[in-house]
Length: 327
Image (cartoon, rainbow, N blue to C red; front, side, top):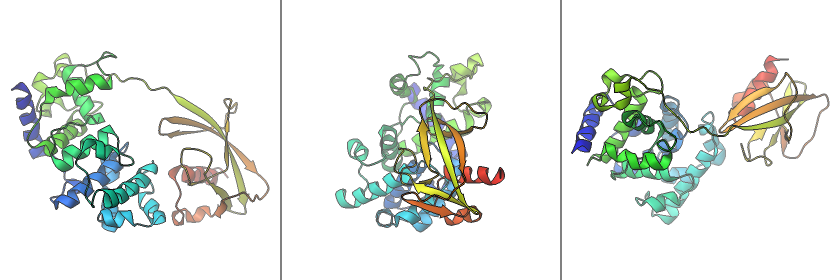
């Protein structure tokens, strides 16, 4: 009964305050399934405001599973350019191809079948089941976790472990409007229960929130190990052009154009080191400028004045811009 009251309060708040988002449009069932899949792939480790223009452009060019399954790889990467984590879009296309071939052009509505698709783990499978198929499942994204941790005042290491959070989320209850309810919980975390300075006076469940009663909104997180790696990046230049190679060596940015690089086993002793954050890796990069023109396997030259003409990862573009600004 208590859980039903919480669910109703959150849903009532959502009905009045929800954002207008392109993947929430009132469309056919098939389109809703496709929109949910695309948006969930895009929203992995990416904020809503960043995703919106990419989603709109993507859907305009690739409106359904069939189009995606047959879409040109180069054009696909170009549409995704700037969102990062490019393995997502490759997996998205593979998933569309499997939906066509294996599931009769329909997104599966079974948890294990969804998880069998490339790029779909526990969270994404749960989110799709709830949002696309209205199944009574609450996926735990960062927003919902934050609401849960504050509502129940979970601070200790054993309390904030994923397994415990999955058990404790039952406090939110369920609703026959499962799709809306999942999005309502996400919206509550995104708009009200913010990481810093939450808007508790606007929260529909603050009267029972322990963090609000204690006026302690600090969130405790399980610290991830800092993965620090060191690289030597070689810059070959011919007049104004830079040499890039197709990356077959490193697991990050696989098959994308990067500068010739090698990983170093020891920390770099230099004041001139570039720092890059890529997923869970902190990259420390020393740049070595070469005076001679090189010819390396799977290499090509790019003109920095025409960066938009190339399909390049953000990492490579940032290096180019750094080199151009420090000439």
